[in-house]
Image 1 (cartoon, rainbow, N blue to C red):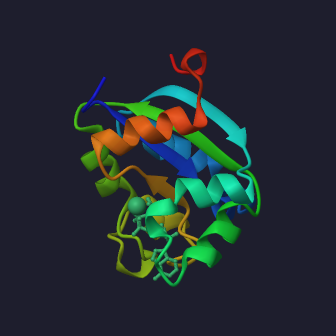
Image 2 (image 1 turned 60 degrees about the vertical axis):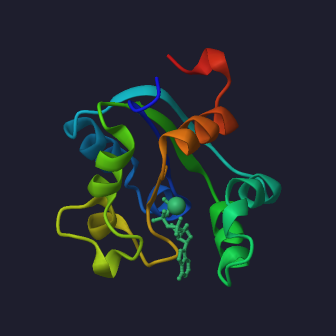
Length: 139
Ligand code: ATP
Ligand code: MG
């Protein structure tokens, strides 16, 4: 599976703003096949663990509070060159810097509330997919 899989979350801002359908549409148009999908909510402990690599960053507390503040959509996606192409599709972390037509440019509120997550490596894609889904939820 490695190389063809990425993991994404539609973050609480984009869910609250009613963008689930539009974002899944962009993902589908970009050629991704949905391997797993659910509406769920992270606990504070889940969000802390998921974003542990950022524990020393000044925005960590804010990030954890935000990511556990409301429902998210978690998904595992498949396509050739999945991780890198998905980062291009979502755009820069700060929507102000994101290219026109990218998901963050279209739907994000701010650098903190930036609509979507995308895995940053093949290794992390698999770790993140297993964090959210059991084996029998991935098709
Ligand atoms: P993600 O991992 O969610 O796909 P990313 O890889 O583009 O985002 P990271 O550097 O991994 O960016 O940061 C993780 C998340 O932390 C960002 O998506 C954003 O929600 C939040 N974040 C990053 N930088 C800032 C900042 N300067 N101020 C507030 N929040 C930030
Ligand atoms: Mg990241």
